[in-house]
Image 1 (cartoon, rainbow, N blue to C red):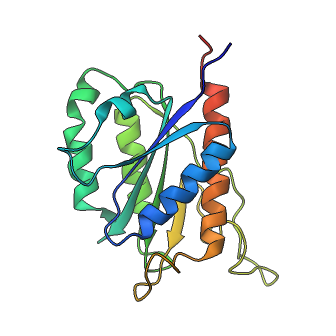
Image 2 (cartoon, rainbow, N blue to C red):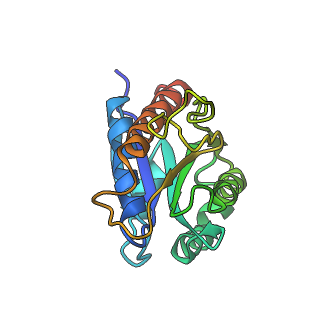
Amino acid sequence: MSKTLKIAVAYHSGYGHTEAIAKSVAKGAEQGGAEVALVSVADLDELNWDILNNADAIIFGSPTYMGSVSGQFKTFMDASSKVWFEQGWKDKLAAGFTVSASQSGDKLNTLVQMSIYAAQQGMIWAGTGMMPGNNSSAGSVEDQNRLGSFLGLMAQANADEGADVSPPATDHRTAEAFGQRIAEAAERWHKPE
């Protein structure tokens, strides 16, 4: 009998938008058959490192602030240096997502930063696996992957709207598909006991 795949979604959310997308990513991963734990990294004193250490895959999430991960997420990255030194997350599957108010907002830089972080941890990075949407005259803002990201999930939340209405439903659908993809990829990558 194989054990249930465990996925941790480790995120920081400043205004609730990134947390809303984290919940959609988690929902998709659960649909992919995984047991999912949402782990806020906002308060390192409250962080349960065991959840991350025992996960088969970790999906990182941060808003994009000033073209980078948030300060709180970077503090989490720096705090994981002991894990890095001991290669505690080596060969775990990793993925990432980010949210900002602008269509671009330099979100790609945040995903690059996360993927390098995962590589330094010895993790295996998985992208979206999605074709870009909204990139032709027949396209629409309702298309899955409307922001056209490959490296990781990108979502956009209007700066003047709360997390109850923004990011839009299409970004939540994309987040669910992304979470499901990562769960399925982790299942393929995972070595049965």
